[in-house]
Image (tube, rainbow, N blue to C red):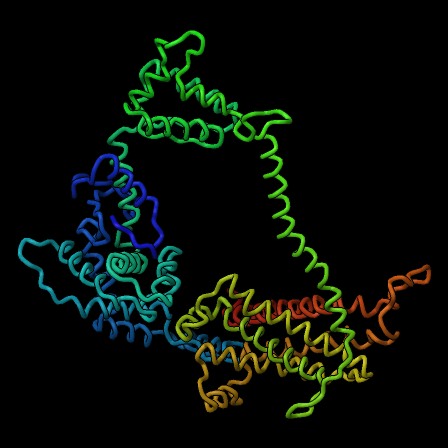
Length: 593
């Protein structure tokens, strides 16, 4: 029952370890558990204490072999081909028309000829077939023969492959173990590897294989219920619940019932009295028997103070924060000193952070209002154009990240890239939102510095060109990450006339066009430095107006406005793209989606 530090420990493992500590390791094959099959009927299953298969873990060995393992055998190729040939003329025209629509509004690549899940299942079955070499020995059932074969497969350290196991099959537990298996710390080994491979097979054939987690959980529940354990539960409520629980413990001790309990469960005030009871049992030489006699206290040693010493100590220090009250008490001044120390430590942590946040607007205003004095380098570019280039690069990357992390291409990304396949909230914040925010700040700084030089573009063409260029380059980057293009020839092949009107490129260019026009409309009449320099806060008077504070307003709102514009355009174009494709598919299908 040993577990690895790299694999999370599950509930049934905790219960198994606790049961073994209390009652010893259980005998193998001593019980069976009843689990429902696919039809809802209960069947007896023999639990194992490792991750290997038992014959009873296979619901129907013969059905598994003939319905799954032979489903992709060469004998069915001819039948599949005959079925394809038997399709009518209308069906072929319909499929060709739908394929044409998807070529126009579809993915950057033509749709795959086969379902990727089906391809992965075929490769997995071929792997299993190649290892079906052991003969069926005399007296061995098919379930035992198949269980031995599967046990040999899950020992293989190369059993897992992206080509054999589709991501859509795996549940959250298996995906978590897969991420650990593929982490930089190296692949799983030993029992962890067998555990992982067992879960892979269960997810690939859920209708035929029992889940080992369900088997072991049901087995440990049955063993625990067989021992008929009892628990004493002490609820919370502060010192009042602790006082009440002490009276309950004394009553149980006087009836000699404490030894009947196997578990102690406590919370809050009940935990206060429960920890005191556990400490007393641990320190008393007679253990629980001595504690029971002390709590019962049937024959007090003295009538002046009849309680035993542990109970007197508990009552003496029930006010555990300041056991000895009073203005001149050391406990009172200790409590005040601890409070002030903790308050000061919290101020030292939070006040600098709050001040830093409050200083951000002043920092942004300082950068926005700074003069563009930098000029030089290889191309003799003014400093504001460096911000423009940085904003262009980061905007392109943010769009590309969104493109290759869409749910529709998630499986394609997993197959093509080991670097970007793990999508999480943290990766989105670091690799998409952060670059987008920096890009928005860089572009708005370029706009402000251009305003100082009175060189703001008046035409819409630079905005449209910027939007189209970023989206087109983002399409190339996302196609590169997805493995659709790997060379310059591949880029040219994907840009040929027959494939240029694809959904990705078409709607991305549309998004860049709309976004450029929208930014031009927002900025065409706004010049942050049209009224001069920054205003003096002391000069605020009755003649104050928004126009006089144009620089401050621009510094505070320009970056979030740019990000909001980007998100709005992406949402609108993505929704319109989905509706167009759905409408065209509906037309081809004769009104049926």
